[in-house]
Image (tube, rainbow over all chains, first blue to last red; front, side):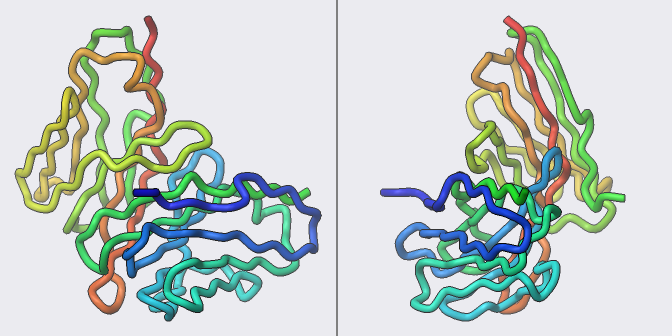
Length: 114
Length: 114
């Protein structure tokens, strides 16, 4: 079956603009994660969804970042008033359930804030 | 300092040679994941280790977990050009509701010279 997909693959925006990044998890996966990867670093956890609810958003850097998953499948990461420091690759992962399950990663969205 | 330190950060080896990548945690390891990443792509799951002393192999890649030393190593035998990429170790850290997030090292960039 299809893996995790993310759109767009690349997004270039100007400082101060609003952006939305979309993640389509593997069908049937109830757990969904967002990570952010800066150049030369490993991914950093942002937020975790179990079903429709954000079970843990402790990794979101500030209140400009928000994510939703209204129907328990597709998720959207929203960034308001983007800053140059938000430039990174945003990765989405899904797993069959919570706990010790392999997380399957999407190809990521490369965000560049000019 | 990073919670997970990988060494070396960069590695260049001749095709056919063996190599080892190390991952050391500053906290107790309850589960350790190894992923591989190529530029512009998501993370590809390699192996998951959960018990002290556990060792897993897939094709020419072997990973071991030493819980006492809070370390894991990834060993590639008879390296091939297809092994080139960035190798990331990720430690499982508990979230609520039994879920786990992954905390990653900074990655090891592996280049294979023909």
